[in-house]
Image 1 (cartoon, rainbow, N blue to C red):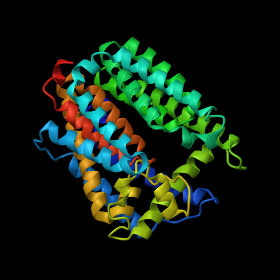
Image 2 (tube, rainbow, N blue to C red):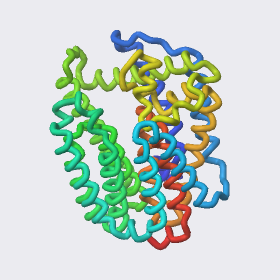
Image 3 (cartoon, helix red, strand yellow):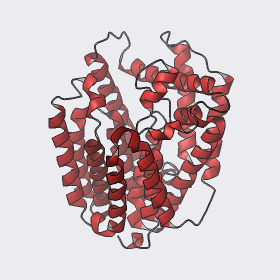
Image 4 (spheres, rainbow, N blue to C red):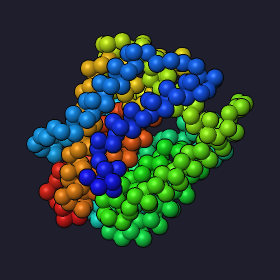
Length: 375
């Protein structure tokens, strides 16, 4: 397997998880602010999840696209009902309508970008401040319109890149500029990683370009992370690079706490899936309060223990591998794999449960349609 192909393969995900946990262990040693060890339970859960993900990439199954669509809609309704009530039903309806007219929707990629940018800009006006300069407003800016806006903008830019790389890059730059004031590094990195995966799969980027993109992404993380901490109402004695290392160590420590508290069988037993955003729920358990990330596996182990981690990560591996095969056989499916793989890569640090599973199910549904190869 060539280097360019290897860096976009689904098996990269468990490798990244392993690297993340190892860096977290190093951070414990180097930074006195952390000083936490790693329990045996944490390594067992992490090892189980990474192994299950790798095994999942080897599984092949014939599942009708309608079942994936039903799963995505059901999970959307279940997770959104508590917070949004009947709006959850409307969101389920939107997913069905979009699926029904998917070829027509995706053929209008420029309109998707324009609509997404407009919605994000309007949401920023509604928030009434710039979250990048006022970090305390960031959580409240993550509204349903914001999620819809960046979702369709990312999709539009990814579709454009496949059809015309210059237009794709221009649209991505516009989306990047509108998203930057929100101060969310994760979303910016998702967009960048997705476009990078597309470029590799289209044969437009080699190993040097990949290295340059990684370096640029690192600078974005350092720069925005430092700006955020400077603007927060607290004092830090760590520099930008140390703050990144601290963040990795803190996240893996929170994952360790989740494993220790959850034990083998978990605590929530299904309650996790009744929330759109689970970081506050996890934060209340592992840290007393706060919007806490604990990697993709953290919420899963708190909900159903080691078994749920194994099943969940196996599905992630299976879904990514299925989408990867579709992308290799049909050029029109590349954006779906690129976006889902980008979210999975970022999930090595953040905890987008259940959103990542809704996204994977929906991507499997649209990429499984017979029309995908014609796009």
